[in-house]
Image 1 (tube, rainbow, N blue to C red):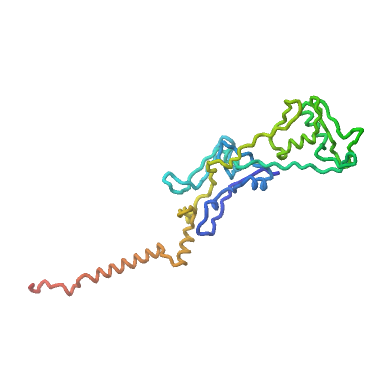
Image 2 (image 1 turned 90 degrees about the horizontal axis):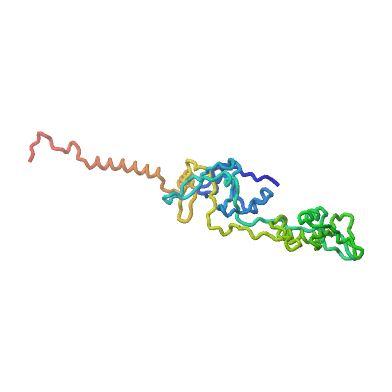
Length: 296
């Protein structure tokens, strides 16, 4: 098990002409499966009071403070731009992943115990420590080994620490192995409660928790680094991305495209030609009439 930690890391500039916003992200994103793989613990249950959130910031300040980030979003004029996202420190420091918490399956170890020459079902075996825990939890009156009988006793091998323990509760004898199997039917540690209101113990699982899989709210956006001087937001017909202006110009040169510097050069040539044409259209000094010449 490890303590989940996520720190902001400024990503390097991609060597691409165009790339998505995610390549500027400061934090890694997680699903329930990848969170469990990365940290060895389950992510907290999805919180319906908040939108889904697939990243978290371990550097967020103590509860009560806020954390501010840059995000890509549409501004009031409908244009994509970098904007500020402000969250409470508590929300910034936690994920809110859709989906159900999964629990490890309850595995009953096999046994070499026998009864009357037949194999004993290991489901009915339990450790004495587990039996006494339930005994105390229910306020039961006694604990017996159901295999310690005169007729058809259970024969336990030397390496088998479990026994066929049963608790006595209000006159009912209940096998502890069966109770543990019921307790963990939906996985080890799955939520629920014991109900003894009828005089015997019954495990009642909690109703399914909300998963957030059908939540219509958009998730919290992913914080990103600032744009670099050679980066711009580029809007296409079907997508929005980040473009490197230096690579765009370089690729355009190699492809023979008409560039801004080409326009500048062409404008300079046009200005020169225009001046020459204007000069050629003016009458020369020798063709003008002299002031002493008689006029017709």
